[in-house]
Image (cartoon, rainbow, N blue to C red; front, side, top):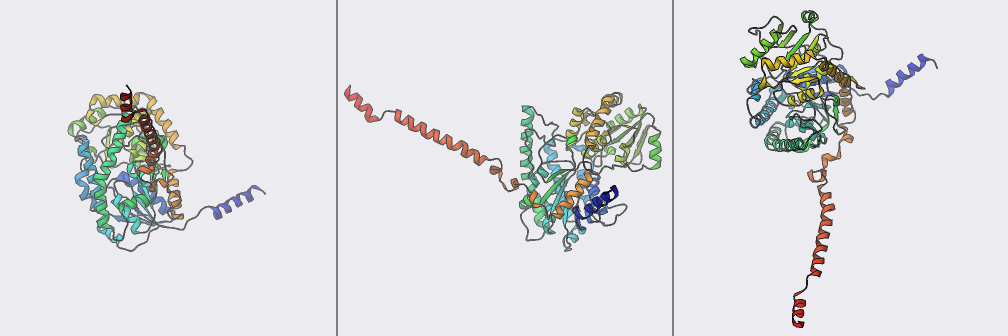
Length: 520
């Protein structure tokens, strides 16, 4: 058999034996009014549409260039509903955690309630349409698990910032606080006793907060939205989700256990082949012989909301640099802007970071931004504000590819020192490139892996065979407390009974003492 015949047989075998799936109807629900969250979810939905699946997406972000097989259900009321929470997220640094935690959950409840009551979404719920799968962003969205039951479809969760209690509870993934750091703490997987205690207390507090602040409201929204008959929301949390896709990768985080239904697809939104930049930006960056510094506080935090004293710090520091600065500035004008600074409301961040002249990324430290910077081997300076940003920047400092400048401590001296340290020490760049090599060393493109699991869940009707039995155990059974009670309790009872019996035999009876007295 010659080579051509062998190649023909291999191709024919692949055509007939590779697992195939007919085109499916897939509903994607990405309610968060945050462009970065949508970027991750839409990358998957676009890939599914390009494979021929019929995709419907609920989100606040309609497509600018509509794709075939991709239908938008655009939620418009959410912007006004959530504006009081998102107008200036820098307030998080001015208030205590005791004020911030209720505020975060209030934002989640407002987001979910506004989305489910949007006329376009209500129309879909009452349409009688059929879907083969629901893909739901997991971000304080428990009430939306009702979509899975209502449409009688399996559900895949998608987390835009990695594993958390919101996701691990859905598929039975263990998260031992002894070595799995809470995503809202800047700890590593190797903790001291005091750190383990802090991590444990934080994890316990998270359970209480979810039970007291979140679940009752989510349950009420669920009950009010989806028609009866329906199971309890707790039952849906235990049974509805077949798998969770995580925007994370172990090379960028810490090794930890996962249930079969939890799959890392971190960076699936990153362009493996960078898209061409607009001509004017391309020329500007190509001409930057001393390098480019890219500055963005993400899609939620707006640079224009920086107080005057903080803004002046950045302007003064940038004006003294020989590098050009691309600044995500959400306004038409920036007073006192230096000549080496170029502002724009939105930059194609992934493709900007892919340019070889970018030497530094100043960021808020969100997972999307840090993932993109590491994929392209660009060191970072982080200004964390809330959420997992502190954890991400703690990893950057320990990994030697970044420095953190706390928001409260921003000053010309502190910012200049951090910039000069990274630009003047090639170790930061080298460490970022090492992380990039580790992250890129994957057997499958993350987006292809995500598409595979979506089609796998559809092919196998929700794939109940990958559901871990831990989802059917209560707290006592899961931790074997009943077994420990028997193993420890029975020997203790036996020992106590024997000791009482022995003591009873050794203790003289009253009659015996009386007889002795008479004899004496």
